[in-house]
Amino acid sequence: MGNYVITVARGFGSKGREIAHMLADELHIPCYDHQILKMASDYSGISEQLFSEVDEKLRAKNIRRLLTGVPAAALLTPDDKEFTSDDNLFNIQAEIIRSQAEAESCVIVGKCADYILRERKNVISIYVDAPRACCVKTVMNRLKVDEAEAHRLIHQIDKYRSDYYHYYTGGLKWTNMNHYDYVINTGRVEKAECIDMLKGIVKRRFLIQENLE
Image (cartoon, rainbow, N blue to C red; front, side):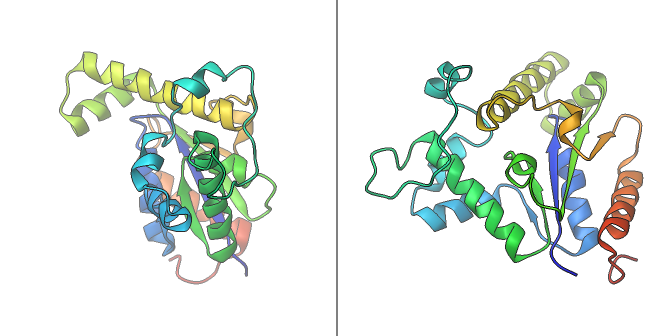
């Protein structure tokens, strides 16, 4: 069989990133998360720090354009004055995501990967979230912060991700469940059950017989 890709969008504190990495381990395929920033840097020659600064968030200029502009889709050359613009940084990452989807089976976390790969038949898109109380508890335990700070971080980071998705998808809503193949509520479904369920979906969808047991 050919390559398959699983994209994972996730609310902050939902354990979506953890599930993505666990699923990749179970399927014996790579999980691309922050690694994409380094790969984009190596590909373009642009500092990884610049990619990190715009990782799933918009800077002031693009926030102002959020409701009025659609980002350019074409990759720019190094001699273009907009080569290090936020839009071009996104487009470079998108090119890396497409290249990896062509090259190998993998799990990709965030970065509008579900939208970037939306036309491909070999992609399963997943959205992971949980009730606010569950996310707050997870963030408090993981980051050792109090309840008020956990609420603040969840609100801030989910807003970053929502604005980023809205801008780079031309106005789509990140939390619209209709954009995804499967939605998982980790407040109701334990991680182990999530992994077993997703492995079964992958096996049925792509007829994988080896290395899944």
